[in-house]
Amino acid sequence: MAAGQQRNQPLLPQAAQALERFKYEVAQEVASTSGDAQAQLLQQWYTGQTGGYGGDIPSRLWGAVGGHMVRRMIAAAEQSLIGQAAQNVQQGFRQAISQTFQPQQQQLQPKDV
Image (cartoon, rainbow, N blue to C red; front, side, top):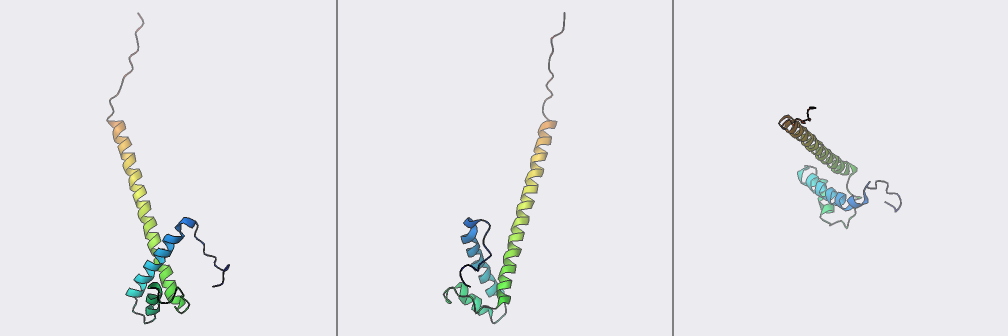
């Protein structure tokens, strides 16, 4: 791909290196689990035997890598949401408990004599 034609920039530039590592990890997973003979090309790519060139790899395999990446990112986001919801429920429960069992303090007001 020529310089300047790449359009899929990460939203957070700090995440670019992590996304690249993630791509290699998923490519390794797809290459090892795929029964496709062309998956060997993907395996050669992630081991560095192609010099970083992935043009010989069919788009179907790149699509599989991207699809697996998206599935794993969605699963991670769902787990995060579940964790946040559980934390909110626990926090609400703790507040309800603390309000229920707090001793009722009565304000003593002086009596007029």
